[in-house]
Amino acid sequence: MRMIPAVLFVSFLSVCGLSACSNVASHLPSPISLPGAIVGSVFENAAYGARRKKVKTYVSTHCVSMMKIGSSGLSLLSKQVRMQYG
Image (cartoon, rainbow, N blue to C red):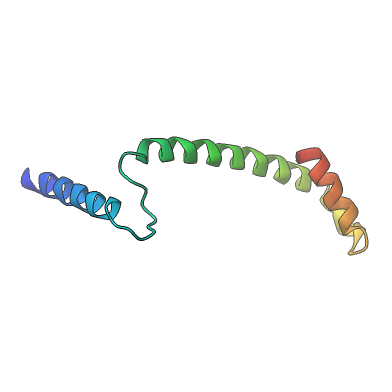
């Protein structure tokens, strides 16, 4: 039972090592830059979630007026949303 985690760890390291040494583009960053990529994605996801929550609140409070606008006022509404939530 104790060998399974060791085998998985060794295979994980070998996959990371082999993918980091290739000359072609890969979805995996190099193992050295993984901690920075993790921290960066955490902050990006938090900022996206906060902005999405603001837009959801705006849309839910102005749902009726947005339905009345129709296609002619859509550009005006999108300008207002961009000005308010950037």
